[in-house]
Amino acid sequence: MATRHVLGALALLPALACAHPAAAQKAYGPGVTDTEIKIGNTMPKSGPVSAVSSIGRAEAAYFETLNEQGGVNGRKITFISLDDGYSPPKTVEQVRKLVEQEKVLLVFGIIGTPTSAAVEPYLNEQKVPQLFIQSGAPRFADPQRYPWTMPISPGYADEARVYAKYLLETKPEAKIGVLYQNDDFGKAYLGGLKDGLGDRAAKMIVMEASYEATDPTVDSQIVSLQASGADVLLSAAIPKQAAQTIRKVYDIGWKPTHLMASVEASIPTILVPAGVEKAIGGISALSAKTPGDPRWEHDPDYQAYLAFMKKHYPDGDPLDVINLAGYSWAYTLGEVLKQCGDDLTRENVMYHASHLKDLHMPVLLPGVALNTSPTDYRPIKQFILHRFDGQQWVPFGDVVQISSEQ
Image (cartoon, rainbow, N blue to C red; front, side, top):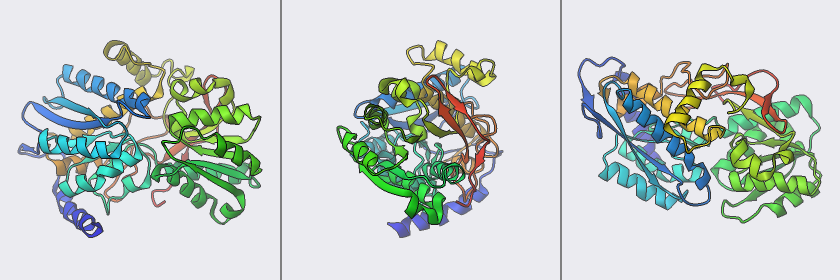
């Protein structure tokens, strides 16, 4: 399997080198005609993280808006979104349907690490772009092994390195407890933290506690982490367990410095169910704007987003960051497709996705932009630390840039 992936990477390099933005002749891959571009997608419309499927509805609404404006270079987007239930076997079934029956040009925006990983080998063997995965696990930014796969989320390990840097500068004697999901998602945060702490990791990390995505609660893990003597908690959890963590830490009277993975920062989806007063003081490294923040009251991108939500997705909550994210990720795919011109082959799509240069995306904070290369599939490598004050995430400190080599 690994050999085929490497050979696939080598085979793609000449194609990417030959692809260019202004092809003189029309060239179409599967799912493309003079009037249509078929895009495939799976979403957890059911299952344990169904709350985040609003992302898919925001993306669908954006593509409908784009179509009303004439589409992409005169072609309308047909967005085919299927339910995967956040179940890897179901994701495999649905993605095969999209590729083999629907004949989509590419697969876009799968949510989650285990679901995206389940179809990564298949899509690379089929040479189908697996673009803008909504997971920051390191395996999705590995162009040597998986040249047809690229994430859109900031890297989980990169984010954890930001927390490590912060602790080394402000709490070098910290005793750290880590709660993480027992899969590539959680392990990426744990690995990034250890990398960032370097030779201090063994001394500073006093306990690691994992949980399974199907576990009913994480209460016992939180109690054990408190008992370890940790005065810092790094949590890397999906919505249900993230809300449980915030509540349990508060309810048992534990007062650690709580470093919350950026995926836990959604105020409506996680902090409100947990109790916003219980999350006060939480710290997260963010790259995206927070809806409802008064700083964006006159920001043109944010105002355009609010107008979009009101007109095209009125049932969605404009204050939920996942809707702003879905809107922005769909916008980014639209920009990549525009750059392809009339050369809408799978190879040219990957060429442009892997040659982003300071691309603006509406969701990003000032000072943050998308940059990729054929050897670096991590579009976002800049973070700003924020602290939750009970109403908003308030930034502190400067933009933290993670090296392209890490």
